[in-house]
Length: 524
Image (cartoon, rainbow, N blue to C red):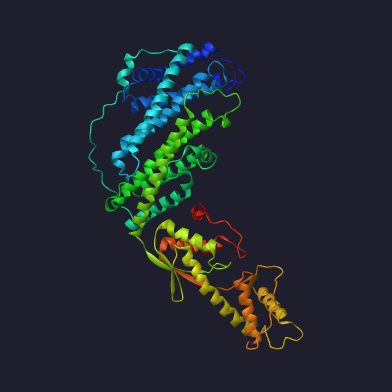
């Protein structure tokens, strides 16, 4: 006999197990799940029937039973598929209910900023909704268990397992704090990370109630299981960043806003977990457009109620707490602002026109810090696109002065024009400057008016005036190495520097170009 490893019996290909043999296995494996189901069914009318011990058992046991069912192919078996579907529903809604209970028990310690809506009451209603689903699901699984010949325990042995009596108070917080880096660095690291994530996830987490008429648009776009799961993962990472750098450090005791921020990160994370599960159940088990052909439908959860909890509990409150914490982060960052200055190139295409001005203003507003743009003796508010537009007047004037000096210095225009018309002189001068990279031509072919030279004007003056007119009408632009100065918060200046290095989001002809990942929030 060889030493080859033997494949487990239930994994042997093309081997069929009988319903009787599989039923005997499931009678052993479902005993604790049946105990929890019996308890919930018997205590359905008690307001405190959903306890963490009960939900923990429902979640753990349903997950284990589902795994066994799936490993034997129960999903596609006529005898067992209904039982398997109910087990999956119990697993999902016990998980959501556990998250909701966690939120309820943690609310006194989150230090959440006040909202107009009553979050505590909304959480209780969401828990009542999931409780109703679990009660119905456990009733159904007990009926299925009877049909399948599974063991259903008497109520008595289950009673003491799931009661939860909680004494008031908390343990003394006497663990020594950790040493940390400077307060300013810690606060700016965490608050900036929160601001960036808040900006990037805003389309999926609107801070308002969503009307049912808007549900289809949101479900087809920003609010899907996939998008919510991705955001949930990123908030989990943000919470880890906080716990690694801030929790139990001296800094957390110095800046009292830090624990408030931690509470908002945590509540948003737990709300996202409920949202992800709600979206999963809707997409997989309720929405007819995403059902697999022939898939059995439980009709356990009303679609309108499920979507209402997804949109106007999970998503709505996550968005509201996100928005309120954005304001908090900006206030925190303003206390630790380090002022600096940078010199960056003027945008190559038309200076500070709509795109670069809007991106800079959006960047500054994202951080909430004051930043000024300075040129000569003028100062402009960098958070206002209109202010930045105004700088173009000076920029264009400087460009024209520089170009006139270049034309005169290089001798491109002389009084002896031979047989050429004045318009031809302008054309030849522009072509020569374009070859030198000093002019960008946007209109091809370039059309000139051929206006006569005024008696009181030299040919050089007339040519530079014509070039200025072409620039003013957007047919050409003058390429220079002009720079401009920004003064303000060093964090904001670092992003402005990166934006400038990326051409302010456009190339020399005004075509859109991708921004670096660090500036992805500007495209939201």
